[in-house]
Image 1 (cartoon, rainbow, N blue to C red):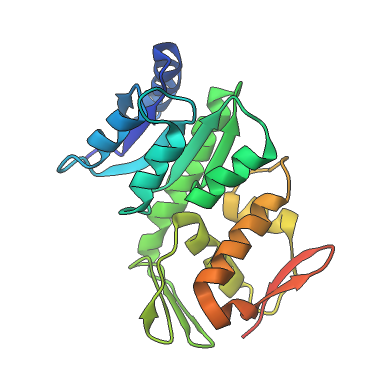
Image 2: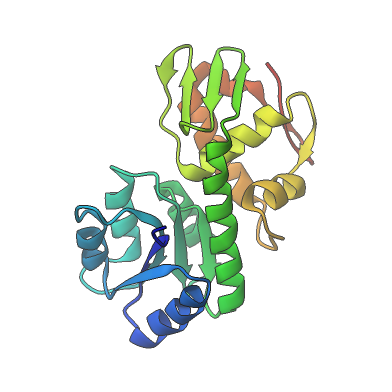
Length: 225
């Protein structure tokens, strides 16, 4: 059985080695890149089959945001952004471009690996073949596809998970904390705007059906057909 491939991009060789060593201990195959352009070149090589990308934001030649933008034009592969910045606008920019996780430096390598495990576990669980239908929306986890009134909906990995969680809990009021802990699969101590940003993007992609995601002011959201 082939190992799961993870692409790590950071201009600091020490950081790549640190993260890479922790991931290799979990039996992942690690591919390294020192800048964003190298990331793009490696990612689009034939037969690479990258399962997850870890991107530093500040890199020479091409930064992490630019590399993420290139990847998102063709792929919904899970992407974790690493940054020394902790500004809210930087996080929102990453999520806006399609990042799935955002981790600020310095961080615990064990926590990073736990988040990698969680994302890949949820990604692999797609093969269980669940299908959800509600109000013209059809979400098929085995094919990782979603249609609205028969029209294909292009969702990022995290948007797909978020919609799946909403449809699994139709009619149930969900707090932001509960959504974060179930969809992101870890205790999140950051700003709740993470959820709000993803919901806003998901609603926009769903068009009129976006109204099925109701806001419960001061609490969170509820999905209703």
